[in-house]
Amino acid sequence: MEYETDYVIVAGVAWIRRTRVETSSGRVEESMWLTTFDGDQPESHKADAGTMSVERGEIAGTAWDLSWSALAAPFETPHRLLRRIAPTRLTTTPAVEVHGRIGDRVLSGAPGHTAHLSGIRHARTWGWAHASTADGRWAHLLTASAPPLPRASQYADERRAPGLPLAHSRVEPPRLTVGPYVVDAPVPSFIGLRYLDTDGSEIWCYHSEAARLRGRGGDFSGAAMEIAMREPIPGWRVAE
Image (tube, rainbow, N blue to C red; front, side, top):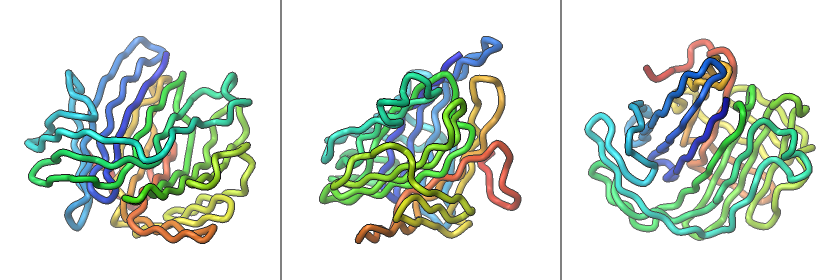
């Protein structure tokens, strides 16, 4: 059993995610999500992945064709000392400039970031936030429960790579605190997606592109933020 995910986020515009999950029962699911944030509320659509990729595809009548170039070097999570026992791994390119088109929207040097995740199962729960700008500045927060590891929490920015994941953290929806950073977003700006984990269970992942992330002298608006749980958050919207 294993999973593998790629995504690209165009800050404040769209989140495009492709994932393959093979469960312990032998079920294989390859899915593509297109989530857009142009209206009053985000909209998300899911389809069989087929030949689509995060670079190009079409779901529910909205096509995308994208390319990007890195503005910052990638980094890996968790810390290298923990990777042998971690059930999941994440490689993030924390700042990119995106070109192309999503629907009718033309992008020329739009800020964003990309990531690749893989492992034998997802983290059980997590709180995450990421901000990036057109000039290559960025900030990244993560706190996650991923047994057999204890809860791991870390932060990083363009001046400081992620260290050992020992930061103080607190998840209080719709607010997240990791180390010296705090991030929050209006509840209506979140949209929930249901992920399949490798044991056949579901994860409720709530994502916003309207967060404010601040700390260590930085103050970013329009940041990405996620809160993921093993049960739905009462009253929060979930895409069908």
